[in-house]
Length: 185
Image (cartoon, rainbow, N blue to C red; front, side, top):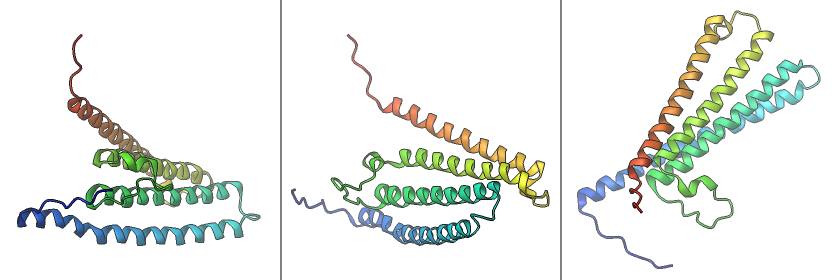
């Protein structure tokens, strides 16, 4: 492994390039937020275990979906923390590490956007499924479980799907524009 000395940048360029480190507190804050989600997961898991014999099947299913929701949001946080730091701040130098996530080797801002959009759709799907299940178990006194509330949740979910398709299509078009033309035979 050679130790190359990076070229000296002009002062303004060095300042602008160094400003990326201002994102570090943001990523550290997201790590703290992930810790909060771990606490929430444990709390909900204890609630589920305590009610395992007294809760109805639907309430158990809602609790399990809540746990899955917490895990998916935590996965989203990991993607943002690791992928964002690697893409926008500094390399993590994980090459060859046995625990390096497979997706991290080819992450860039576009890949990160598509992965985040897919994760948001997954989280939205869990919320919508929880709503559909909860409608049968809860009264209509909560605005989320009225006909209009369910309609708006469905519209928002479909908007996420269309947005993700738009991001993926734009990524596809950009990859076509970047590829060199094939040689004619």
